[in-house]
Each structure stands twice: as C-alpha cells, then as structure tokens.
Length: 162
Image 1 (tube, helix red, strand yellow):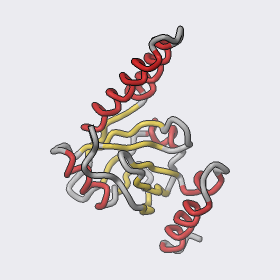
Image 2 (cartoon, helix red, strand yellow; image 1 turned 60 degrees about the vertical axis):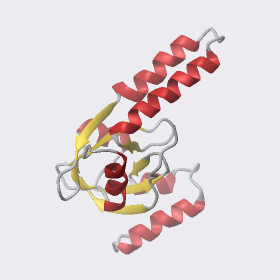
Image 3 (cartoon, helix red, strand yellow; image 1 turned 90 degrees about the horizontal axis):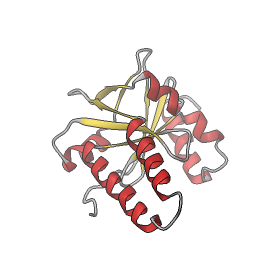
C-alpha cells in the first residue's frame, strides 16, 4: 500500500514547561488528508536520538511491514524473537496524542525523555513519517548529513537562536 500524502519540510517550535508544542500546519495537513483523526502517534526512533511521529492510519501500515519482514526471515532461527521485538518497539513504546484546534499537543514526559526534547522541537518531514528532534542533538550527531544540519541552523537563525 503506497501512501498518497507524504510528510515533507521542516520547522522549529518552542516547547513550554508543561511540554506543549505546536505541530506545524504542513504536518497536520498531511495527517488530516490521510484520515479523520486529529491525533499523532509518537514513538522512539529506531536509529536516531529523536521521536518518530505519524498518523494513526500509518500504524497499520507499519504493522504490515513488520509482518512482511517476518515472512522474509521465517527460515531464520531468531525470526519469531525478532518479530516480537519489532512489535514491542513499534507499538508498546508509543503514545497517541491528540492535537487541539490550534495544532498544539502535549508531549508526554516519557516521549520527551526518549526523544531528548527540551525547550525546542525541530520537526522534519521524512516521507511516510516525520521526526521530532532536539536541534542540539541533531547538530551533534555525526551520522546526520551536513545539508540537514544546515537546515537546522537556518531554523535556529530564523528564531534568533544561532
């Protein structure tokens, strides 16, 4: 199943002391095009020190991808264990959060910790999903391409923070 609407773009928003942050309109538009839920699913990213975020409908697609991996690997002795591990990471360490009419969400404390999110949240569209980063963590991660770090620096400069 191919997704018709993809997440793309970037934005930097402040996070208040209670963990409230505005989800950029360009991301909310994609969520609403994909379905009726005004909800975002947050999960710890599998590779990077950030959060992965997506609409609830994407969760079913994510499960299908995990199922297909099991089918490809079922001859492996560890296939079932890997399948269970992937499901646990994909679904047990995630939280659904609604956004209000202004696009604000409350980042749960566990998700803020998992993503290292403090007073700033850098939103990055990455196709099927989007990511939420602490901008400093992105700048310090050696695996991140310099062009993406430039985007982060630009967003910080826009807000007078660089």
